[in-house]
Length: 168
Image (cartoon, rainbow, N blue to C red):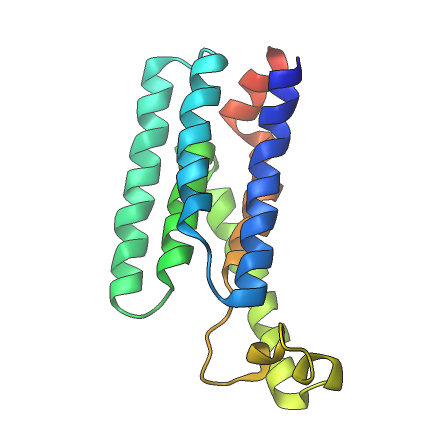
C-alpha cells in the first residue's frame, strides 16, 4: 500500500519539480526525465503491467521522443521539453497521448499568452526578481515544461498505470 501511494505521488511530484525548474531556470534537469523512465520501469513491474502494455508504453515514449527531437532540431522546442514530453508519454501510453497533447497545447497557449503579457507590461515584481526577470526577456523562450507538467498531472489519473497501481 505504501509503495502504491509512493507511485501515485511520485509522478506528479516529478512533474511539479520540472515545471518549477523550467519556470525559474528555463531548464528541465535530465535527472527528472531519467527518474521518470526509471520509476516507470519499477512501478510497471511492481504493478504487474502486462508485457504487451509495457512495450506499447515504451513505443509511445519512443514515438514522442522522435517527434519532439525533430521539433527540437528545428528550434521549435527545448531539449528538456522534448525529453520531459517523451518520459511523460511513457507513463501515459498511446491511450492517453491525444488527451495529453490537447491539454498541453491548451495550457501552453495560455502560458504563452501570460508570458507575452508579462513581456508587454513588465510588472515590477517580475522585473525585480532575480529568479523571474528572464520571463520578461523577449529573447528567451517560453518555459513550456510548465504546460507539459500540467497536462501530465491532469491526464495521469486516466492512465493504465494509475489504474493498475490503485488496484494493488
